[in-house]
Length: 563
Ligand code: NOJ
Image 1 (spheres, rainbow, N blue to C red):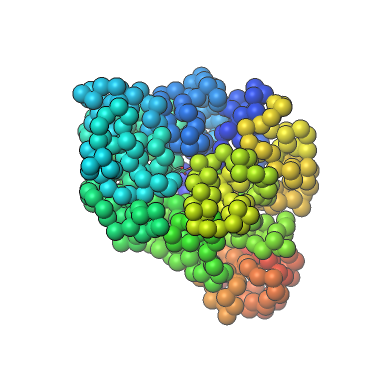
Image 2 (image 1 turned 120 degrees about the vertical axis):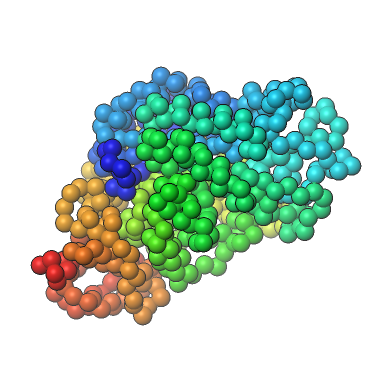
C-alpha cells in the first residue's frame, strides 16, 4: 500500500474508541478491544482506521482536550497497546490514523500548568494570555461551546487566557516558534511508529487576529462569533505548509483536515502541493443546522438544497484535488434520523443513503455503527448526556425561552452523543460491547435488532449492503476505475428530489440514481445499463426506470469506444 496516492483507493473506518469495544470490562472501550475486532474490518473490507483521540486526557471534550501528546490515556490502555494495534493492523494491510489536536491542549497539560504556576516560565508564551479591560475579558468573543472565550486566570489580577472551545481547552500560541517545533516533533514521533496519517482537528483556528473591547454582538448573550477573527486568517498558510513539508509529506501520510475552505483557496489546501491530502466538507452534513449554529433548532432544509450542495461540492472539489466523504462522524447525529422522515427510517432508506454517499468521488469515511444502520438514542433525561456541546445547547435553548420538552427533542435530533453510544455487536448484555454492569454512556435499546452479529448472518442487511458497496471500490473488477477515479457529471433529471450523477472514465460510465422522496419516480436512461447494486429491482434494456420511494440504483455501461 505504499503507492504514492494510496489513500485514493482507500476506505476509512472511523472509531470512537470510548464506545467501540471494551476488553477489560470497565464499561469504556479500549485499544485491546479494537485489536480484538481487527478481523471485522477485514470482513468489512476497509483498509484504514481513524481513531478519535486516545491520548491522555481528562475527557472534558471527549479526548479533544489532550494533557499529554505522548501518552495513551490509561482508560484506553498503554503505549504498548498502541504499538501492538499499529503492528497487528499493518499485518492485515490496515493503516491507523490518529486525531491531531494542536489548536489547543487540555488545561491539565504540563505546559499550561507551568504557565499558571510560574508567569515567568517560557510556557506562559505557549498560550494566549491577555490583560483584561477593567477586570472584564479583553473582548466579547463567544467560544464555540458558548459563553466567553476568555477565562479569568485564578489568583492573578485582570489576567485572562483564550479558549476557543471549552475553558478546559486553552488555545496554543502558534506565533511562538517553540510551540510549532514542539508540535512538529510530536507529529514525527508518531509517524515514526508507522502511523498511516492523521485526521486534523480545528486546524483553521490556529492564527488569531485579536481585537480588543466590545465587538459587534450577534446574539442575545452580547457576544460575537469568534470565527470571524480566528478562522483561516492570513498568515496561517505558512505554518500549514511548513508542517506538511516537515512531517506528513516525508512519510507519504494521509491527512484529512477539518476545514471549511472557500473555493478560491481550495487549491492551496488540496491541490498538488496542498497542505493536506483532503479536507472534509460540511455543507451537506450540517444542512439541518441553522446559520446561527443553534442546533437545538432545526433548519428548514430541502432535498433540492441537499442535492445542490452535494453536486456543487463534487464539481468544485474535483477541479482542485481530492475529497473526503462522510455521512456521519462523532460530531453528527445518525444520518438516518437526520435525512429521513420518521416513517421512512428503515433498512431500505439506509441503503439509499449508503449508495448516495459511497459512490461520490473521494475517500469514503464510514463511522462506526453507520454500516449496521445504528440510530439516534432516546435518552431519559439531560443527565444521561455526557457531551459538553449538548449541555451548552440545552442551556442556550432554555435561555431562548424554549420549553424543556422541545429543547430535549432538539437534543434527540442533534446531540453529538447520538453517535457516541456503544457499538452494537450482538443482542447480548450491553450489545456485546462490555461486560460491565454499567457502560460510560447508555446503550441504544434497539441493539437487539440492530447489531453486527445479526446482520452478518443476513445477506439482505444494511451491513451486507455496505460490504458490497465497499467491494465495488476495493476489489479489482469492472467499473472499479470509474467508481474511484471517474469524473463526476451531474445527470440532469426534471425532478428536484432525484439526485443523479455519473462517474465517467474514457472506458466506463457509472450512473448513480437516488430517489430522495416518498413517491414513485420515472427516470429516462441514456443507454443500456447493467445493474451494479441497488435497493430495488432493475430490468435491463428499458429506456426508463421506475424508482420506488427512497429507491437507489448504481448502473454501469461500457462506453462505445471501449466495446
Ligand atoms: C472538532 C472535533 O471534531 C470536536 O469533537 C471537538 O469538540 C472540537 N473540534 C474541539 O477540538
